[in-house]
Image (cartoon, rainbow over all chains, first blue to last red):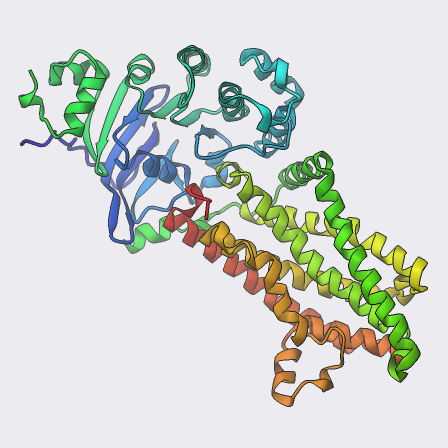
Length: 263
Length: 281
């Protein structure tokens, strides 16, 4: 069995300022178990990058380290050229995230939640911004309903509204369409595409949905057991593995089949 | 590795120390929305203090008729009940506001926002005072109406008592919050139980002299002991012991700083162990 190639990128000691995100030899070890094992990559500004991998591949830990929720065992993260978490106060106002692993207070109405987060992010003209989001994401019917009483699709739209409240330059999304029906998921993807183009925002997306990644991402990083198993454009990866879609590539990587073993 | 650790250490390298009142206000608003939306939460704030007061108030009435000290120091017992409630409810108000974030799985959202941990703590302190006021002000009015005990007649010393007690309650609340952040909701019972460790030691209902000598040393290491001794001196002998209040304040400063350092150390530990993306039991 031949393992898939690992990118040989070694970043200089000073992380590049022109990248939206630069990750340098990042390691996370929980007790004795390496969750992330020395990964390095850079994400260009204005791009959408998909982070793929099976359960336990290290995607969520990687994103959590980029956000500063988890401290690396070793290695560095910089965002817009600023080291995290040392410069978190300057960085966090320019980024936001959505994840199924966090909720918003359920007793607060959607409007109240957006008001609180808008204030935390220092959003100017907050009422107008909430009205704009309600219009863009079709929240009008339940803006004054308790967040805990919404359907899964409505909750995802509200979580996305919270993630966009400060019009972030960097958006981190962990399974943004998990548990949504195909129509709702398609709707969310359309809005993410529109937002990226309108704001020239950078998006890092962790997902198990290969069709979503193919549609949204212009680059794919595949992780396996805490390491980067492959890193290229979706077309480049499909060509190298001689596969018709990323789902087949995902299965190849997950089952340890190398490019040379694929048809 | 040591360079990486230094770069990644959260509290030591957060270079912007400015505090945003707008973000603190946002958090206070968030808890205000929550209280407004939930009458059981509001009722709970008033229910226990009222029950405490009524129970102990009748006991005080009985004892006052039968014991010399309490007859002389009318209200010392009720005063102790109310001041203990300030201490206990102050800590509870702080810790429960924090626990609301854990229960709502909202900690990740907050820690990923520009809200600084110190601003989070300041918002919790504000909420502790607001929740305390909702619970204790009606309690003091009931004491006046039912037992003819006017806490506010204590005057300016009451401010010294209150400040010292609330500082201790915040220190305890900060420590409990840090422990819950690090160890998850399995540690939440500390919010209700830890303060009771102080109940026998801080001599709420009896003088320090009652304790054995070796235990008195432990009692005098705790700021609330000075407050309860000061209250008894004031109500029994009419003497305000400013020296006791100053000593309590000095101890409180030490405990408060220690609690803040412990919180930041526990927060860093939570980040190292990935506890912020689990936030369960």
